[in-house]
Length: 528
Image (cartoon, rainbow, N blue to C red; front, side, top):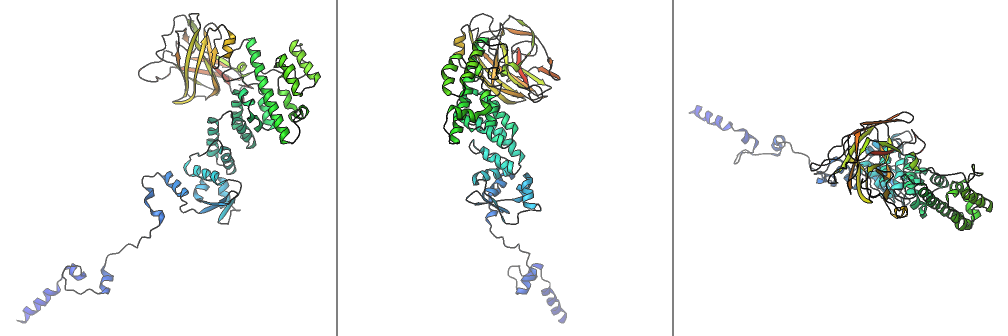
């Protein structure tokens, strides 16, 4: 019987793995703390709850996450005290080092800041926040009132992409109220491209700008650049072929505005310098700027009645000007009598497309007219010409035009053209109405010249509402001319705007007989 007892003991000792660990339900095996410690599975360490671990990352892009960290000051490793109030604000070194060599030297260079907080007393907190927002997101958050402050920050920390974005913003939001301020600030910040853009805007809106109080924002150097320009316009759209009587009237109106602006600026300078605004003091603060006014272009009655009251010219000078106006000599005795604004229209070149014209009219305007073109040189597009009516009657055309660079609209113009008008006085009083310049065509000018980049496809679309008109035949595919080198303009059939209609104009026949262009002054001609 002994062998049987041994067998039973052996069976009790053959337990399952689960029983040996104490996890089997109803196990008789007693578990000890030692056993649990050695046999239990590994457990993850407890997770501490930080605000940064909230689920704000869900659905956000990397840029949005960066913006969140900046806005909520998450894990900032560099801090600034900003403005006169020394407001504290944090950022991340990595982002600053990536965009600015100034920050790189400031944070990692041999003269790096060792203090945990960097002082920036010359920038306000709102501007600094907007600057950091651009660094983190490349989104420009400015208004016309704050954009120049942002330019100061971009220049200070040498962030080139931000400077480019600011220049583009200013150009797009230029106005009569801001143009002089922009020009002056661009001059102070040594931004020649922006200064040129502001000057071009002032030239295109000369009478409105010069007759406003905003002209007082200019320094003496910038004012001289404005009033000495040959490209000043009387008002919007007055860039066309003028008859002699019309040219004199336009020149006189322009010089009145120039003189008004100059005197407004001189009066402001006298008040600023706390001296009495007399004619003598005004002339003193103006210096050579006074002689940029083309006094000989002013009407005689205006010289006698208005200019004499200003007391900025001596009796001898006024007599000399009047003598020149009434009976101009072959050679003027003084520079004040021998100046004349050349005007931008004298630098505009006509690029014709057709070899001949047909009296067969284009179909009535149930479609549009379009032509594409490329150039081998950068140039300016000032406008275009259109064929007028062949009926000989006075007709009104409504014009809706657009210029595309590839698929991007870079210029729009909606205007009216009164064709075959007989009464010049009525025409001069009509705002925004262009006059036909010869027997078959009239010219249409944009409010501002358009930059045409070389080797880039541009397309001019024109919707023309009005009577039937002449049409061009024998279209040229290329037009070339020499001006310090070969300039070549190549025409192409324009792509269709939509599937419901087709352009009535192509490279062979149709409308848009010519483009009105000028060359870039810095590389081709003195002015444009």
